Image (tube, rainbow, N blue to C red; front, side, top):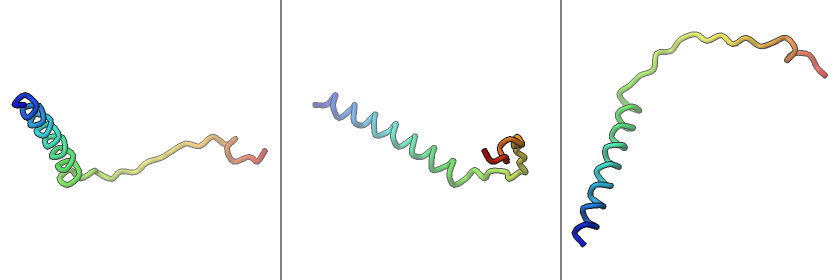
Length: 48
């Protein structure tokens, strides 16, 4: 039984660290907006 509790504790700690990292990335990192250009080939405009 103690090995099961130890395993569940380790899994809970790993999940908490991953959740904390995702939370920190979502709330504390702001992306830098920049312009974007996409070239579209002319044959995409022609009706077939």
